[in-house]
Amino acid sequence: MPGLRDLLNDLAAREEVTAVLVVGGDGLLIDSAGRDRIDAEAAAAVAPGLVAQARELGSAAGREGAGCVVVEHGNGVSIVTQVSPDVLMIAFVKADAPFGRLLHELRHDRERIASLV
Image (cartoon, rainbow, N blue to C red; front, top):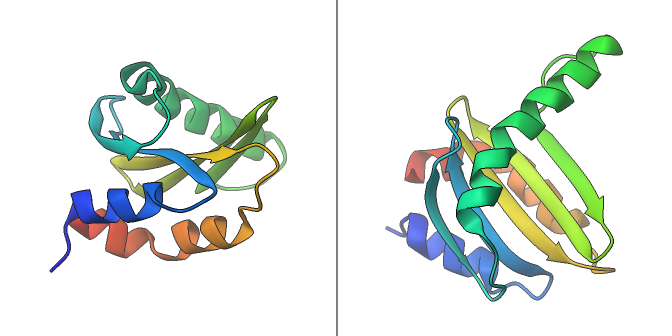
């Protein structure tokens, strides 16, 4: 049965993905993979706060939760997905790369991803 490392390597091997991280709800890095050199520890530390702020934004508009946060940067996209109450997954995507299918898969495979952590 494939494990977390296999899942991360599969995601990181996708053409549009440059790096992928699994992060605890406390902001600690659990694991990562990818082609880009990123400060994975710093990204992990920021992710829970980003999700918390997205929840606040939604709350102000009468929306509940924040299962997924997409941030467009000048040179790419970050997708932060809440895979369980205590685990986040961050996928970094190339600039101008289509990522709709990846977004769909991350959102709909939360339980499977969480079971590997």
